[in-house]
Each structure stands twice: as C-alpha cells, then as structure tokens.
Length: 109
Image 1 (cartoon, rainbow, N blue to C red):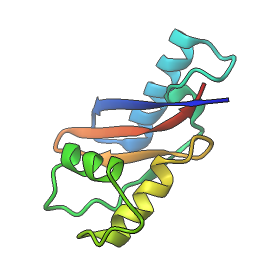
Image 2 (tube, rainbow, N blue to C red):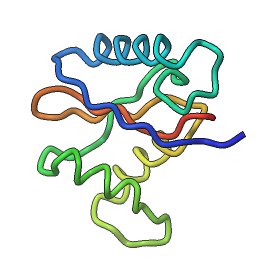
Image 3 (cartoon, one colour):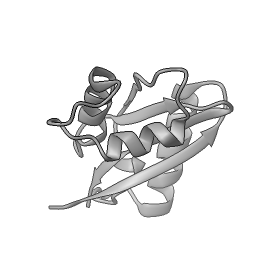
C-alpha cells in the first residue's frame, strides 16, 4: 500500500479537541474503511519540537526537505519531527500556529 501527505490547518486553543474534530470530519467525509490518505488514518498526534522563532509553514518546509546527512540548523528538532511526519502508521505531527494548529504527515492509501 502507498501513502499520501495530508495537511489540516485548524483554528482553536485545544490541540486534542481540534485533532478529534478534524479526524471525525475526515471519517465522515471519506468513510471508516481505512486507507483514505487523510487524518482519518491517525489515532493520535505528537506535538512538534518547532522552535518559537520559526513560522509553522516554514517549519513544515524544513521537515519536508529534511536530510539525515545534511548539517542543518535545528537538526535534532527537525529529526524528531521528521520521524513523526514520515510515519504513515504513527501519529500525526501537530504544529502550533498563532491561532491554532497544523496537523500533517503521511497517511496510508
């Protein structure tokens, strides 16, 4: 089976409430049969290690471009977040924003 990237931007103050609502909406829209390539495939989330001085969208770009061999700034934080983001069977990555959260990662299709 393959995988697809999902990206859900949600406004709110509670990550768990936002995650549960997004997952519920995806299950309703795409069904409960599995392999939707959406947040519906995730049973939980892991909060990001994003430094406060970096914008959430920029951080996602950095995660997507992450290279184990590269000598990047924020290597440890990026590595931890990349491992969550890149696992289609694991948690969604939860990145706080100014007005809510971004849940993203790979999901099975």
